Image (spheres, helix red, strand yellow):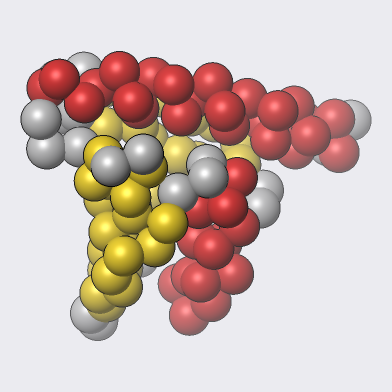
Length: 105
């Protein structure tokens, strides 16, 4: 899991993740990400250019999205009151950012 950056966006209730993601092998990115977040995969949906997985983190539903053409990956919540969960998850991903940055040095 090679995560380069994470960025919270309260307006869209999302956590953008910049990473190297292979659309055809999305599971090889998403499964370790869910494990790192201690989230359970509830559903997997995909189409011609998008993956959308429903995750469960401590009874909070999270959507993990990846769009091929924009090379965009993000986690989102549906309720404003769940934004704190995304902020917490951003903190959980920080060690993975450092590992990716240190590997590049």
